[in-house]
Image (cartoon, rainbow, N blue to C red; front, side, top):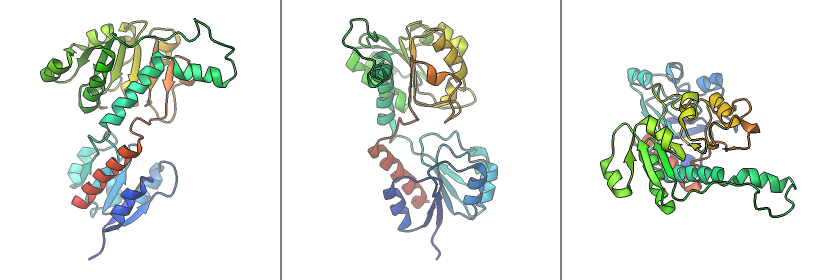
Length: 309
């Protein structure tokens, strides 16, 4: 019996690749970059399984290129907005992701963004590195306190709830919106369920933890930013298009809100014009789940999904 043929669209931890190689023939994208559309279509031809990343748009054309023998596409990511699930269902192809294992890392990273923005860490670090620091001053890089403030959370799923739990260390008031109210969580952590309008108006810090769907795209835009406090800080470590990035740039530039911390962007790796020129935003390159432990755990789920099939 021939061994299954697996293609991996970008290099992932060697331990994951080695585990697949025990029972499968494995080929990995040799380039340290995402494949172009044409390269992806050519690479998946005649594969039994494909391991994809969130940068790969897996639609009907890609699935047809893979061929009728391809029965599983395993996303090395918690999201699946890069999947055309309808097209996969029509072709009898299983699609999987890696939920759960990156909750802690992503929630912690969102807190790192929040604290860095509130305390102006990147801005002040650049100041020191550029040789501009001439000594202590009582009014240099005045930031914001976190303790006792109101923390708003949009989306109380696995990551959102994990993020909220960490607020206890700062004695914060937690308010949240979610598709469904979570009364048990409210009792345990003193959280309050509110509508979106109240979330925007009352939050000192607003962190987004929603999936990207047609309904949630541009969850935050100019109208929403205008409702927030001038002292508010927006955090997004979920998906870039949840925020209208161009309108956020204008809001930050005009001090409609105080600051932001972003791990994800609307058109990665491209940034909205002017975003990288603003001092009141922390920007990092989509690294929320980038810990060794998390990457290995994601790889195990991908391996289990493919070999299990």
